Length: 149
Image 1 (tube, rainbow, N blue to C red):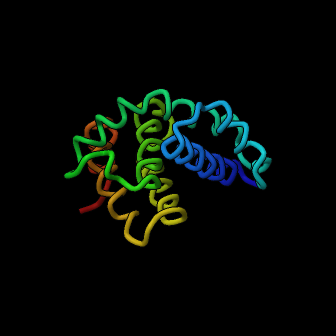
Image 2 (image 1 turned 30 degrees about the horizontal axis):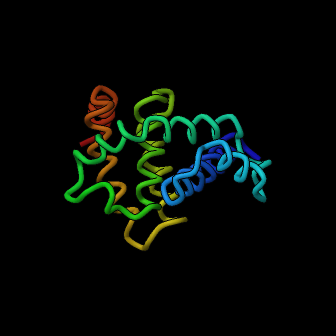
Image 3 (image 1 turned 30 degrees about the vertical axis):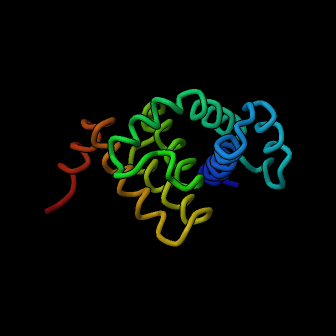
C-alpha cells in the first residue's frame, strides 16, 4: 500500500472518530482505541490518524468559528458527516501547512462523497474554498498565478 493510500485511510478513520465525538460527546481516548481496532486500520497511517483526530477535536471551537464565517446557517445545523469532514480539513489547513490546500480540499471532497449525502461534497468544497483563501491566502494566490488563462 502506498503512503498516499495509508494517509487517505487515516483521514477516513479520523473522520469516523470525529463523527463519533460529535454524536456521542465521548472523550477522544476511547474513540481512538475503538477506531484503532477497526478492520483495515493496520493499513492506515496511525500517526497521521492520531494527530488529525486529536488535533481536530482539541481545536474544534476555533475550527467551528472559522467554518461559521463561511456558511449561512449555524454550525450546529450541519450534518455530522459534513461537520466532521470540515473539522478535519480545518485542522489540516490551520496546522499542517506541509499538506497543500488543494490536497486538503480534494481529500475532504472524497471523504464527503464516501460518508455523506449525495450533494454534501459540493457544500464542503464551497466552504473549504473560502476557508483556504482566508487561512492560506499566499498559497491560494500562488496557485492562481500558475494557472494558464
